[in-house]
Image (tube, rainbow, N blue to C red; front, side, top):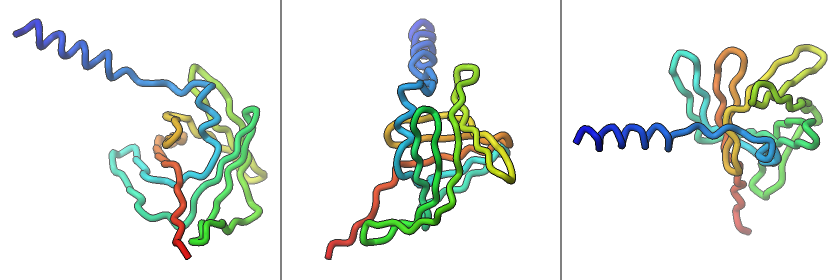
Length: 140
């Protein structure tokens, strides 16, 4: 019985291996995203069920921009001309999104990224989780 328990624990440890973000995953950032959850360093979380704004991200050759959009029921988007430019920097086997504008600069560490979700963590330890946005289209 002891051997089975030890085997089970070892199997669990090896199967729970954390998947790192790879360079090949970076194109997944392109597209429309909505925030799903914010986790704070003290352990509290805030869930987002309805989002009036979403983020559009475009990345090419490790340079990109992020823009706030407001989806409309006809499938179009309302947007401003303001956007946040960023570059992706690889550091110690992780990827950092480095933002800089005339007023400030900040970084977000890319924690998780796949075709349907991603998460970033800022310097204060706040974790932002996003899910791929799928527009609601009301048939005519």
